[in-house]
Image (tube, rainbow, N blue to C red; front, side, top):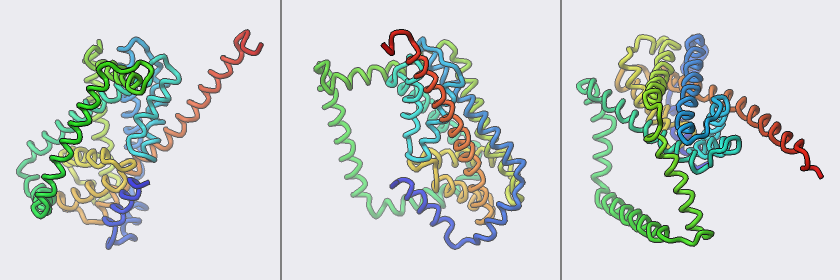
Length: 335
């Protein structure tokens, strides 16, 4: 709830003082054909992500039907709208109930996925800044770097102390865990933790021992291309952003992705702030249409997750009921 409250406060702050009637008019007059296309692209990106996750799971010797993986993935995304990062646990828990792969190993595959995706995002950010450095330099200095430095200068001693203290605490915890995990009691807490970490490690290693690495790269590239088109197609939904270029779409993809990965449910507030400020400060779009675009793009992503996630939960419930019925119908169980 705290994270959701933070996102809603950000939404209120960026919408404060703007013409609400103009924002709603942008919604009413939007071309929903492009929004529908963007929604289809987003749905396709989730399907490709499920196919890519299957590659990691298959490398552990437990192939899973793509439909089952997709349902678990969408159930996880739906959970993320309630609590940030809960979706990673949810999708692994759901899939572990319908496949022989352990929950801990599945968590490891998700960690491997997330690390690779973060590297892809960093690459996109690097290319965006490098290829448009002259264009972006003034924007980055004015909106991000100078305000951060000016605020940090007033508290540099406190920030330095907190940084050193955090490093000492983390190092101490790691050393403590390392000693405890050397020879733990098998049935004790640290024995169970060691087995869980071993399962996660096995899942993380899947990205290295995977046989279809070229296909994994193809799927990953396709995911980010589809993400780009989900951003770019929404440009044409409102007149004020319909003239923006492909380069603008790449920039919005990079900036908006940072908003989505922020620790708030579904990127609420952070996505809208980063997207709207980029459109206004970098591309000269008026505040109201910039915020309207952010609302439309984010609402499209969220609507797909809610619709597909709800349907996925229905299929998960039906599959679970079938499994229970088969178990009860086996001879000898009711004796």
